Image (cartoon, rainbow, N blue to C red):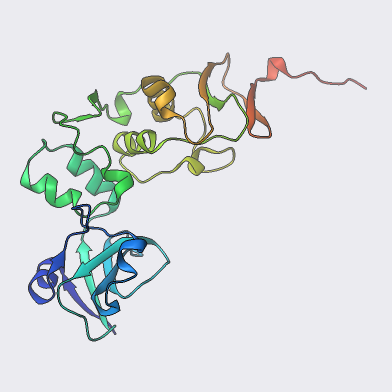
Length: 238
């Protein structure tokens, strides 16, 4: 059974070395030449907490951490962050820039979540945008869809803003037809309307279409999508 220590114990016993970028997490091309017994992998645990494991691991990997001293046994785990990644995001976003606790939370997050954290925004803002709670968003009869070839996808900025509003980890796959959330989700609509073209992922061009009624279907061909409602569907009578 692995011996579990916390991040304070890790700092005392091993010491942490910042990445060349100045961040906590290293990239693979940065650690591949580091002595292997100084490399740790940050992973998401089954309880959604963040842990450091000795050596290189691929499953649930967030990034790499390098220590000053070498580890001598793989039977050790570091509880790197006792909270879930989603809660870390919300807590960090609620604190003003420069706050020591905000910096400590930021050091636990991956680049995707942390990309917006040093913009100089005031408390409750991301990218200079006031972030509402999910309960504050109006319910609209509207649908987000991709208007061009290549498929629906969201930018890192859009995903970070979505996570701040929703209070949980999401990615663009969660909003594909038949997945966790629908394209009518109020947070998705708000993010796309707020960011405009900055919400577009790779080769995507997103738009919001208002619909009458509460039923819709998304048709897709080579990544280009269209929104259909019952009144637009033509039926063949026998």
